[in-house]
Length: 267
Ligand code: ADP
Ligand code: MG
Image 1: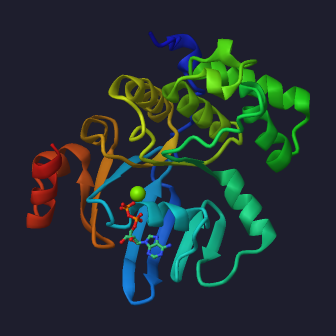
Image 2: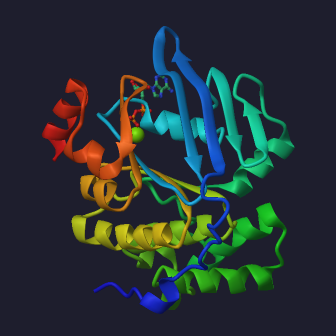
Image 3: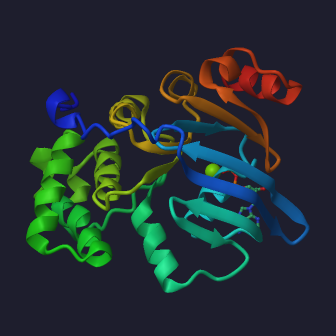
């Protein structure tokens, strides 16, 4: 059974007063083209501080490509990404300084956990803090142990990833991303490689993270998560946002035929 200690899971409550309306992420006219194939078609999106937004939509609609534009893993053809005070023109190669700022402000969790197999769980969480933030090993380890406790894995710190279940490995990947104190967390189908039971323990951690005030953009095929945990749902199809609004409204009463068809097929 999972070991989620409700006390350790509580992350520091972010001070939301006064910044609830402040945009923390802005995507402006994001366009991505592969040859003649338009994968992202002038997409615009704003996330306010503390907001949790789910992106759903059929396979191939451009969801992963969009997340990869935000952290410049795969820059867009044109458009602008603004994260906090950092503005990046997607059509120009980013400077090393911009990339470092971006890596600090934007945490990313993928479908595959990508932990280093030859390093302990603790080391996996500590190393990026040393590399990216310049933290000492002692400080990084301390922070790592706190975060591993928060995702219910304090006792796994000194083991190797191979000894952990898929759900545990994904929670370690979440702790690793949180360890850089990001302003926003991006998730790309974090539970789609997991059995439902193991996916659930990851979703619970994400739910606590959402409640703690973290700004989150979550690509998911978990319709229940989209409806109940996120504040807003975005439906994408063919590189466009075809519907967006408060989660329950979008999930229960979609307006466009395309969105209706998609939800009917997956719900
Ligand atoms: P989703 O995550 O919504 O399933 P993706 O963002 O992965 O969709 O892909 C969107 C579209 O972009 C798909 O049609 C895919 O085939 C295409 N695509 C993604 N990566 C590449 C690439 N490196 N070269 C060419 N086409 C790509
Ligand atoms: Mg994808």
